[in-house]
Image 1 (spheres, rainbow, N blue to C red):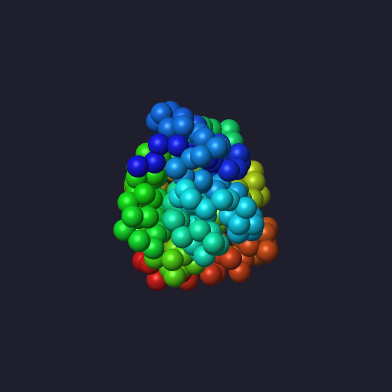
Image 2 (cartoon, one colour):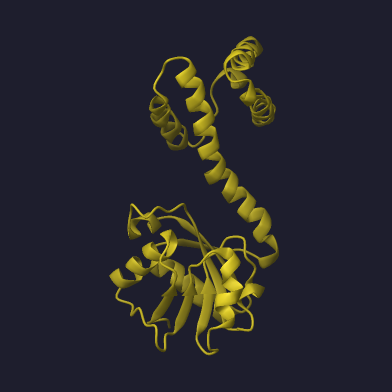
Length: 221
């Protein structure tokens, strides 16, 4: 049973996690906690873990970092919230998101699932050796979406249209369970070719990206 947690790190994830744990009535104890939860940059996890006295559970929230980074601790696990965070919002960012739980024992797995559920997350198991491919998928879904929005916005600006007009379109695509529509789904190659001509004329730096994404989308279609 985890009743007290020392959250190390006050960034985007650490702030939301600390606020949620306080909401749920857990003690944010920096003295003798049941769990020390590292919400620090990936590169700092190993260094911080070494400085923690053995005894309590020690866990991190990184999606890419293996459990070995928590050495020398053996009472360890990872809970990675599959979500993007901002300091402009609070613990509600955790609500309903999924969480990858990585553990090396049944006891650690139970502790990880309990923490995830306490935070309002939906836990699922993730093997340590699968972290890289899992995190690659998460990065494509979140980070590259930002890149796509920027590129699409540049093209709308070139047409004299407001780039923020794209936002409801992107939101509705998600709400529609990513149902594919548009010229590639219809097999309309002429429209795709006109896209490429227009991109070449206005933003040639985006042409290669469009071609790669068109090929990938054709495979989906």
